[in-house]
Length: 152
Image (spheres, rainbow, N blue to C red):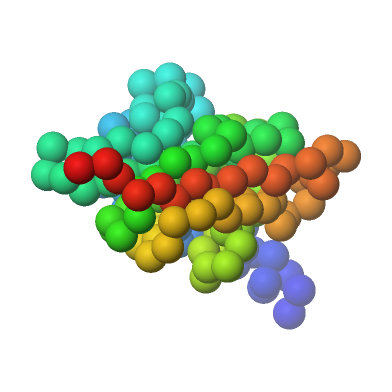
């Protein structure tokens, strides 16, 4: 039985038949294909300059990178009441991305992109916590999402 399980896992690994984490495959993000991010092309993706972007159609996307006991950007500023798609990846090891007071909780995996869409309904600051042990500085990985009222 153990041999069967080992062969199945090995075959899955080498054939690339593991699930994409983006839900929509990240097909519209430059440098991301089927939810996978090639670390060699990292500088050519929106993750090279993390933060919030407003697209031409008025939608918002945020790009977040977890690495060596920090998140970039350190504080993600977002507008209240607007749908925002947040894309998270890791530059080094597994990290968690949990926004307190919400149901947003994902794992940032090197070479993968986790995406989710949410709308923050109230202004304020929410803590972002790494809830996946990532090394000796793990306990310092606390950042924030600042939800702000947009000026007209």
